[in-house]
Image (cartoon, rainbow, N blue to C red; front, side, top):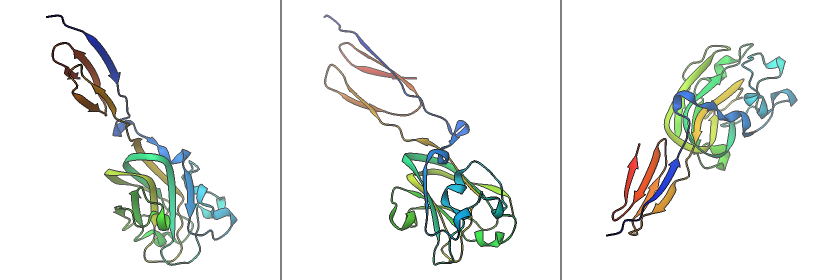
Length: 197
């Protein structure tokens, strides 16, 4: 019996969590309101951990019910962790009770997306990491459900863009779908056998 040999080599590369980049830096940002011109939403992804509001590197909303800040990552991501830098010159207590949410809805600033974490304490000027392993979404929201003013001096989102699965079919009509961090060598003859390494 004649065997047909075809070789398909697909290398699917992705960053592991340990090598993840801050994907918020290239996102688009919004907040529920802006207290004054130096408290714009973009300040939270300017790459600076500066905690003094007067230096123009922190956000600031008005006093309102459930103020929020959101970054649109422009694609769906597996979010590994989010790091938040608190204000240090005053009002650091405002961060207590703040929630971090990850999901695919922008409705109400993403405040209805699944909650990854609640900030119970963050010292003035400190940066803390909140693990969000298993959370997926295009939007990362920080909101204060207790109301008041929300000030964030940096929000860093570490994650990996969701893979688009590769689909292929064997000579015998079997369908396969693969995505992730591995190499697939697919050899077909009489029977198609995918080898995953």
